[in-house]
Image (cartoon, one colour):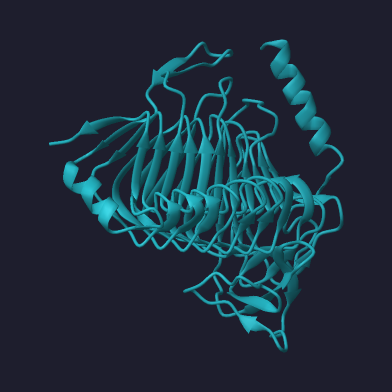
Length: 413
């Protein structure tokens, strides 16, 4: 192992050691289900973690299920849950009848004011719009909830894997139900941070009303890691810089981040300066279904990608907006092929900056310039019919919804 990896490991340990390792059910019989095995943990009441503590799942032998059971885990400074060093965690919610409320906080820019009673005088936010003025608006949560983290740099509610590029055993989190809502990060991932060599899968549940001051209002992903978004909802999240719902940050040392958007996932009404829905650099994005709707940004209402590869074979990108350009998709790159070599493994890969659209629905997106797609120095592959469809069915102040600057247009048959 190179000296660089020893340094990363040491940094990870320094980060983890101050945290009091608090595990749901350990030393608390009220929270552990006696009818299940030792790797099944079930909340039987609300839990408030002490400042600086986290629920830690650590090590390859740890393969656990956490049942929120309709209750609330409320954290403070640290991420509520950390999954590291090869551990695997599945989050479920066996009781969706409990109701929680989250009121928008102007100071935190998130739905971080938690209440078990309906806020008086508030306006409930429902699917169909992203309010310009969020004051007194609230979100209703049904079922279990992870909320309240305020001030953590990496991952408001959940951290998967380690930070700072350490490539240890891959960690894995699958979310099947429940909600991650009203959390705040001062850096990356208002709801979830996926660290190096890790994976996060959303197969149900909601990531809503979270905030990052910089990147990834809902989820932020570091290089050589991946996320799969198959079902559930990522909505009403905000990033101060890029990636209202999701931010992908690949780099040459760690190679690519990977995002798969599929099936019935909904990415709705998120916002950022760049990439209201999804933003990323040095990433691969595959859209095989799903709905990207109502997201907004200064540039790149639906997507803002740079030096990446984006393929779309199905799904909907509709009603997203950008103040300047790229209502649906903003995509830029250098003219050169990207080339990456992992210094640890020697793995080498290269390819083109490519936007490939085989099919799908891209319409009713809007921007001052290029309401559909705005491309800069990338390869664009689509049929002439698809290109014409995008140009006609999106809204631009300058009248042209597809703009290609220094872009090689590859015509499909």
